[in-house]
Length: 141
View 1 (tube, rainbow, N blue to C red):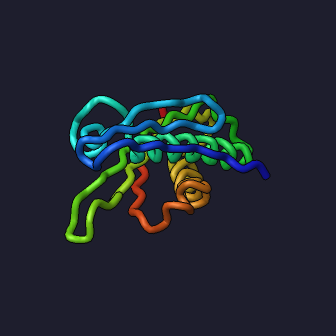
View 2 (view 1 turned 135 degrees about the vertical axis):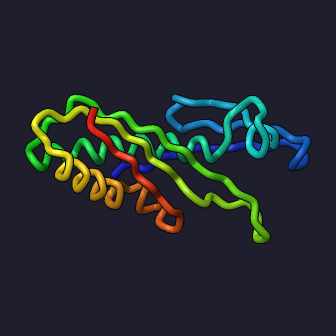
View 3 (view 1 turned 90 degrees about the horizontal axis):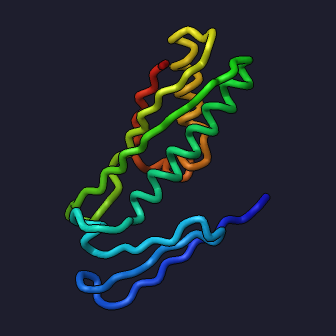
């Protein structure tokens, strides 16, 4: 199986510094800072990248699970909201909400929900984030 790489570089102090994160494939190279991570500043942050990874992984896992159940999805669109909270122990990702809308001809709502929940539990990123509450809102379009 392939190995995927990414890298980050940080220059300066925590609050005054700045950095970059990039994918080994070259598909993404973005700036981040204290402000873009813990405030509403310009740039990306690790949590946003985790959200993108989770949304992408779940969408593919759900499509694959639908196919295995003999359904042919036309589209699966997932948004991920990653909640970063500050506690006495420090900053923690407390919750990830997956909001999915899919077009799947010929499926009933119960079967759709059953397959969606199984895909949420089985996708590799969900399994990697097992210590985080993951909530799924899946609906047929």
